Image (cartoon, rainbow, N blue to C red; front, side, top):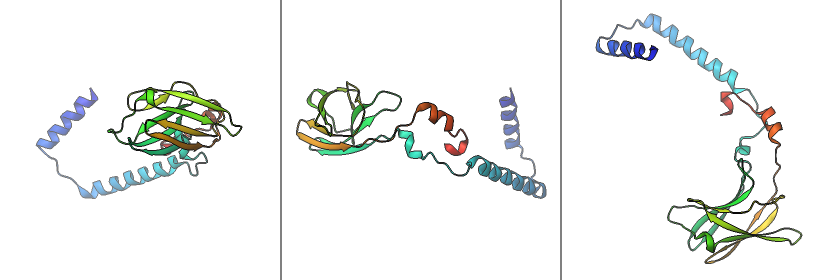
Length: 172
């Protein structure tokens, strides 16, 4: 109902404008500007210790340049168990999931092979990646093998993260 009244008032003022009294409008605009600046200052919250690069759950991306195109290889764990993702840099680069695999080689020599599934715009490993995520990965593609390395990053407990999360507009 209020929206209809506002719409009616806007249309009527558009069709027959009222004169503006600048002597009254300028002080009101200055007060509005002051209120907005005070809001920004209050909502900024000062120093943020959590670092905004944590928002991607520390997804480490490695690039592979193959004859089929450029691909990003990452460990994806945003709200799901960690899996490998291979994403093409361009839409023209496509890979057959059955022709691609990832093998991890851990510092102790342990190896594990991961088969991939086509998820539309990217390939994803069918199995979860066990911790820790410090290993060399050999990505096998139709045109060769490519080595990439991943390092273990500090993981945050969800309860601790929720307790320290900044819920103001400045955190957006």
